[in-house]
Structure formats: structure tokens, C-alpha cells
Image 1 (cartoon, rainbow, N blue to C red):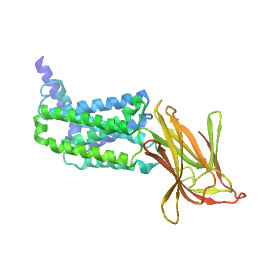
Image 2: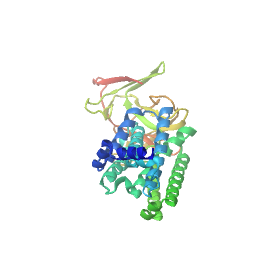
Image 3: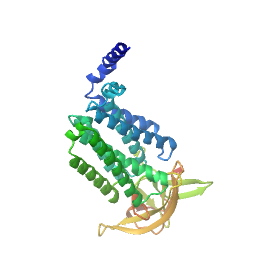
Length: 376
């Protein structure tokens, strides 16, 4: 019986699949990273769906377990156990989870129409991808391994905690950050204590310093409004000539841009007729039952001083749960010609969800304007 078992193990170690993995181990981790990225891109949609929450939690559990197994594998901990036959797959499983979690956050961040507010996240994401490819030891490099894990866990808790408690503000964001620190330090110290190879490779003080730098950087991005206040997201932002409500439908009439301007609906030049109102329509995604005060901050660029002047803040309450986002609008009359922007902000913290840019130019009442109508 023992001989048969050993023969099975030998066949498994020499299988065509394992030979293929060994032959292409240089490129497979990146392919698995992209595989996880594509998998979640095709399956996830709303952060407050049970399916999405379950998938994210399973990814984090799966990732945590695999990182623990991989680090102890360096100490021959799993020798002569059933886990030994799967050791070669652990780096690939970790890469898949890295890619899956990264894509999930891209999905939720990219709901916002203001790409400039999510650019910092994409920069970090691209850095993770290239660092993973360029570092000589890749995911076996424990400094990279725990740094990426912390970045993903920070984002995970920043999304999950507000969804579960149905509340979001700066205090909740800080609580999410502290939770991510507790998670990563607990896992890191536990592995450090039970794994001689980790103690040999990793200087604990250096690793903790790297994590704290990441924590500080992400908080800097948040409080200096370089990322949107997750899990809120501005899905639509349009400057319009008219907004009408009928049977719980919002009819928005606006000047359409050229067909090849796919990232924006309205023209940047708003043709303003005498005594006409200027409308800003927005649709804001929020998780189910999450309530928040939102404001449209109207700003005008003073051509003399070259400074933005706050014209007015117009606030209203939103409640999450609608798939297409909570719809609302504000409007102004007696507007000046020139460059305008309307910042969609949270009232309490003044965190920016997105910005609607436009320029008001005078037009006669008889001038023909190419108008488009959309219903939300």
C-alpha cells in the first residue's frame, strides 16, 4: 500500500501539468494575476450584493491561507503531508487572488465618472503589476508579498466595513485602516514566529515600517481627496438645459458631445440663452440603506484673479440601494459666462466624489442647439 502511494506521488510530481508549470514558471504568475483580474471583471458589479461580498471575503480568506502555507513551505513544514503535492501551485493561487482583488477594486473605483480622482489608485495598481514582474524573486519576495497583501487588505476593509454598518465618514475610514493594520500585523507576526525562513529573510522592523508608510500614503490620498470616498461613487454627472421628473423617471435634456468623446456625455461648451437655468444632474451609487448628505458645489473661475470662486453649495440627502444610483439635480440662474465646475462632495467631510466641468457661452434665443434627451 505504501509503495502504491509513493508511486502515485512520483507520477504526480512528474505529470505533464507540473512539468509545464516548471517550464513556464517565469511567466505563469503574471498570467494568473491577469486571470484573477479578468475573472472578477466579468462577474462583479455591486459592492453591496451578497454575491460580491461573498466573493471578496472568500478571496481574502483564500489569500491569507495560501500566504501562510507558502511561507511555511520554505521551512519544509508540509513535507510528507498531502499539502506538499500542492506547494508548486501556491504562488499561482496567490497571484490569482491578487489579480482578483485588484480587479474588484478597479470595478468599484471606476464607477466614478471623475477618473482623475481614481488615478492614484490605478498608479498603485500598475506599480504592483510591474513590481511583481520585475522583481527577481517575484512573489517569493516576502517584502513584496506582505506589501501587496496590506494594500489589498486596506482597500478591502475600506469597502466592506461601511457596507456592513451602513455608514461612512472619516471616522469609519480610520477604523477601516486600523482594522487592516491589525489584520496584517497579526498575520505577519504569527508567520514570523513560526517560520525560521521568514525570520531569516525578513527584518521585522523594516517590514513594519514599509506597511506603516503604505498606511500613511493611502490616508494621504484619502484626506487630500486624491481618491473618492469609497464606497460612494459618482456614476453620472451632466450639465443640462432641462431636468424633468415624471413617474419616478428623470428626463435630462442636454447638449451632446461628438460621438467619439465616449468618456463624457455633455459638451464642455454650454450654450446659455437669456434667463435660462443651468442644471447639474448627478447619479450617485451608494450601498443599500446607506444615507449621506451630498452637495453640489458650484465654482466659477475668475478670469482676472485666475482663482476658483465658490458661488454656492446646494445640499441634499441620498439613500443607497438603487442599482442606477441615487438621482438628483441642482440648478442656477443669473450665471456668468466663463469656465465653471461643480464638485460633488460629501457635506460633512467635503470629500470629492467627482467633478462636472463646463464652460458657459452666450447664445441667442433663436440659435439652434443640438439637444439630446436621456431618461434615468
